[in-house]
Amino acid sequence: MSRTGRSGDAPLTDASQRRVRRSPLLFTAPLVLLGLLVLILIWETIRGNMSDGARADWPWRLQLLDTEALGSLLAVATGAVLARAQYARTVRPYLGWQGVWARAGELKGDVPAWRVGVLNGGQHTAVIEAWDCKVVLAGDPARDDGAWVDVTEAATQLTAAGYVVAEDFQLTLFGQGFPLVGTASHETALVGAFSKRLVQGVEALYMRVRVTDVVGDSHERVIDCMKGARTGINAPAD
Image 1 (tube, rainbow, N blue to C red):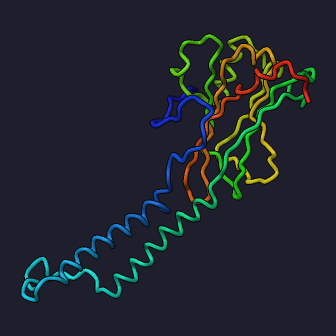
Image 2 (image 1 turned 90 degrees about the vertical axis):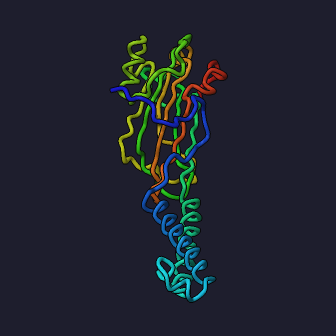
Image 3 (image 1 turned 180 degrees about the vertical axis):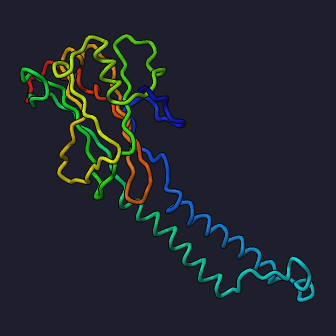
């Protein structure tokens, strides 16, 4: 089933990773609390600079918090916001990809295939939130107009264009919640394998991967699986 693009979609390029959503609970709530405490501080500062007679009238007689308690809460809230920001930077995923011509056995006949893999170069596991595709055939004028679709629909579009599953392409179906484990070994998870015929006939095959990290933030990257494939199309396979 096809799916329309989300608001604020990244441009159709092999774009850098971007954060598209922060956790409402772990990011927004501490900021809201800090904002409320700052407002209370302003209120109490104004009250403290008024005469005793003025503070006897409504609403200035309303004391929300005493200075000592307010200072402690402000220190805790500020520390929580800063600590969360630092921790989120530490545990953020780093989505990367790799493409290489190889005889890896993904296509029938053990023919050379353009093999594309994705990895998480961060230190912590991220789980897949969404995985969408967009196929752009050679000479297609509607490059930016097509809808993002799931992997099954992308395979259907390639089949309708005359390409054969297992002979011209293989696409990996990643389910929601699939973990991309942080790795320092640069070992990739297979995204797809593509024949020379498909590489010559498909202008671009975009993969939009969105993951959620351990603090609930969402990160997204758009990968063009055809990028770099044609520059080495006649190179010998590894």
